[in-house]
Each structure stands twice: as C-alpha cells, then as structure tokens.
Length: 135
Image 1: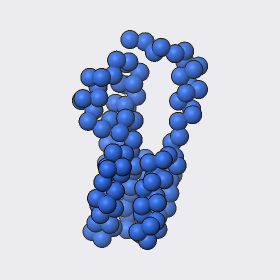
Image 2 (image 1 turned 60 degrees about the horizontal axis):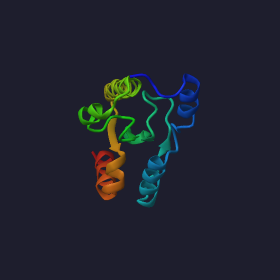
Image 3 (image 1 turned 90 degrees about the vertical axis):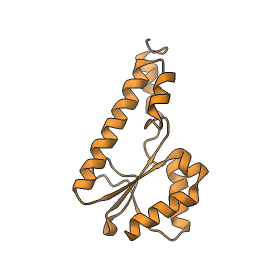
C-alpha cells in the first residue's frame, strides 16, 4: 500500500517530529533530577547519541517511544498497513541493536526505557537507572 500523502507532505510531517527534548525525555530528565541524579544530555560522541549519560559510570540511557522503536513489534506490524512505516520501524530497531552492541563493546552499560514504562511505572524506571549506576 502506498502512502496517502505526497512525499513533500510526508517530509514536512516527519521534520516536525522532535528527535530530542520530547515529552517522554523531559519526563525522564525530571524524574532523575528530582532524585538527585546529574546527567549529560544528548551525547553526540557516542554510538546512537544516548538521550542521557553518566560518563564517569559509563551508563547510557535511551528513552524510546513505543511506536517509533517498535514496542511489541510483532503485534504492531500486523496493524501497520503501510510499507513505509514497517520499513521505518524495522530500520529503527536494527539501528538500536547496532548502537546498543557498539556501546557495550566500549564498556558502557545501556539502559533502555520505553515510553509506557515511564508513564506507568516511573519508580521502577528510576530503580533500574540507580541499579545501573551502582553496578
């Protein structure tokens, strides 16, 4: 199935989607800040540009949107009727795995936080981050 909007319209729509400082990221930042954790944002020198890092502890945190990064992708894929979105999400997931592996090879601990986890279980998310920092 083809996209229902022109390439130009799709490009305009996609360019309006934030890649940093999303609501989900800001929520995670506030959670960590209120717990007394001080972090660096958007580490452009590391694979995947983690959303937050704790450089001295070598902990990288990615805050992933459920749709964009394919939470429960097999179920999501069944609902997607457009090849564009299937390819987009599959490429995102492939890139996520590659960046995760590259960071691990450099000795970094990687914490991946899903959007729904941050909304539904913020205390659990904070606990995971603290455990990674203390490991």
